[in-house]
Image 1 (cartoon, helix red, strand yellow):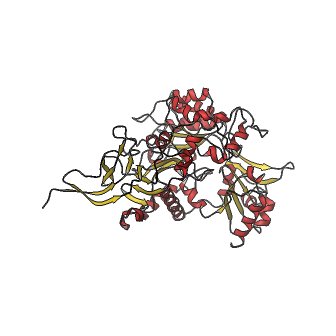
Image 2 (tube, rainbow, N blue to C red; image 1 turned 45 degrees about the vertical axis):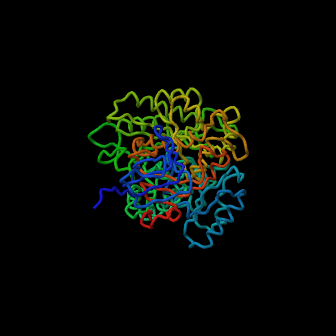
Image 3 (cartoon, helix red, strand yellow; image 1 turned 90 degrees about the vertical axis):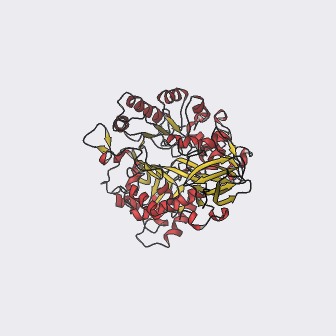
Length: 557
């Protein structure tokens, strides 16, 4: 008989970066029942306490698990089975890739690819060339921005574009040549004409895609993500998308914690209260730390890389200024009605015109009664081009900007060409947001544009370097410690979880990552290539169980 306390796990011989101001560093982490019991200054447990499993990490860095506050898991998981078009540098290579994939498919099967870059290719794929490459099959190729796609004639025929029976969704554009003939390029909401030919995907197929995506997330150190748009609009995969996440969880295949953003079109008038909402009066926060409903997502515009973001002035390399996602009055009313219904809102706004339109709506919503006990943490997704006037409004309204720093490397040169040198330093600001008193939670928008590895995102926050070596907005750079906080403390805060995760402190979730080096101390050029040795969510290994010597039952399947 003994009174000795047995805890689940002791990670020892570690360089622990806690991000807890009360105890910034340690040498070991004690974990019990999915929570951090203590961060220790040496490897010794207190008298009367022993660990069922003791794992030495050989001096490796242990930090809080990473959090991607804006990405698309189901979409990314599906893209893993699509033709990878990223990195191709001419249209012939695209057509060759389509032909190769089509050769192995039935005659009426869809050929789907993702990640093409029209700037690198010298233009978007043409539908008649896709007809030849696909052997007459329906071909659907998605731009790396996800705001444009190129399709074959068979897709246009099935969608009713060729015979004129198609109804173009608000905010969408069917691109036509000088003779008025469709080129096969669909912008923004018009992409639904292609996507709806395959949607809704089955719950089982989506659960499989989510499993594949979250396994990748765990390998790069993620323990929490926010799925930025489900169930409706051109971005949703199925009206039953939440059920797919539930199924993945029930199977044991959800390797990260997830918040889910319903897309605005799924909200409707619900009797018994003001504003718009979901059936049963469901609101953000329903669920638990593993799977939960998050904010409502609304698109105010498109993207810079596709030249569809809504700008006040025409693009430097185009004769237009992009597009709003709908009539301004419609977007304004949708945001205000969502707030009136009790929703936190995540407004996608990249161009400066869209940013101003979203801020106008947030300002109007702020004058309305808020029907919940706690003030919402509204979000401006991307916040791509924010001038000083808009920055002041953001701060005054308390709306949190959600930029993606890695865009600067992946498409920074293209974005700078789009907005012109006089506005290039306004792209995806960071330090200015912090100086204005705002938080800047980190995110990737995966699979759009960037590969989504948090460490590479941190490197871009520090360097702000494009692929061609240009530094965009050098005064917007932050140090590595701030970048790490963006992927941990600040990302947990925007989800309302600042008291339960994002730091390594007693009582917090044992969500942590074991790294081959310390993000805050290495040369910035090396941050993106630091090894992710292992990832633990709730004290269980979702990646690297074999490296840590944990038993098989310690890992999520």
